Length: 345
Image (cartoon, rainbow, N blue to C red; front, side, top):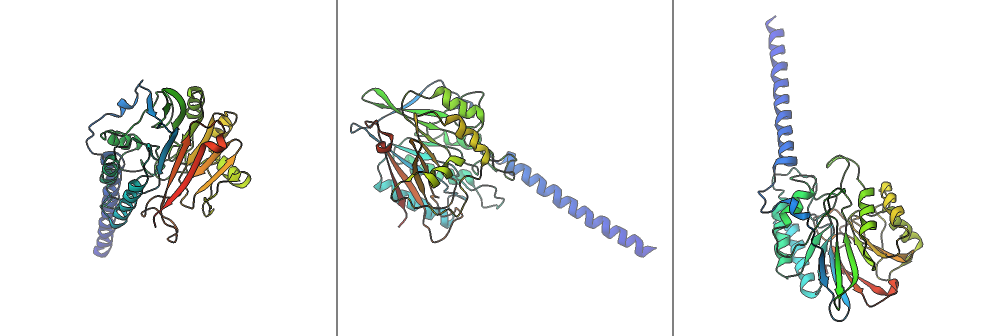
């Protein structure tokens, strides 16, 4: 009898320890998902502004964009992050531009390591960008809001920086949607649209989400009567069609190690904008492979590789940024853009 009692007591003790571990882990997860967010200087509600955002095109009629994406910063101070910041500084020093677009996955995604600190990472990156006095914005990626706050928390944190620009409208999906009107000689000459391509259907662990009908309809309904370049993080199936059937842009070899068109629900977006001829560029990221750019159905489809050393990738392939110029004086879409891949060498 005493042996049975001791066995029973041991089992109860063992189960109690397991339960305590599960509760502690669950509490840690709850904190990391919902509680580990710094005190914000701003409120996300400030994003709902009636003020339209516009930038001036230089006198030569050419507006330049530096696109940075998939840096996957870990904490802003680890060796790989420092290496990425050093590379980006070199790019900024030698690449004057009129706008910087951070096209998603600025920080790493679901990460429970104690040394992970996405807000310090954002701070280190933003301070570097701010030192160049260039307006910059952010199209949310699928990883940015997976843990330690969502995309709205990330955007709210970014609002503390003087050159960060953002906007959204009520009653549509996504955390960031707005137009940047480009003015040339005091007239509207081009438009840039920033779009949230959403993250996952179950936060951090579910399948990829997609661009919702409300967002595509917002884009179509609010589009200016000028040629428009649209930036978002996760590509649509039309990118694969453009790669296979379009005219490939020189200098953008593409290694299809990762699937381009695997988010099938984004076909809804492709269908809704298919006949809108003013959309002349769709620019995305997300695919940690080589760059791609193709001219297809009277618009460019451009896909950027990763820009940081912390991102998972083929070690033989260096990070790169994409430099895009828009000649607003051109009426022909094919001649309006130039694209350059800037690798870390």
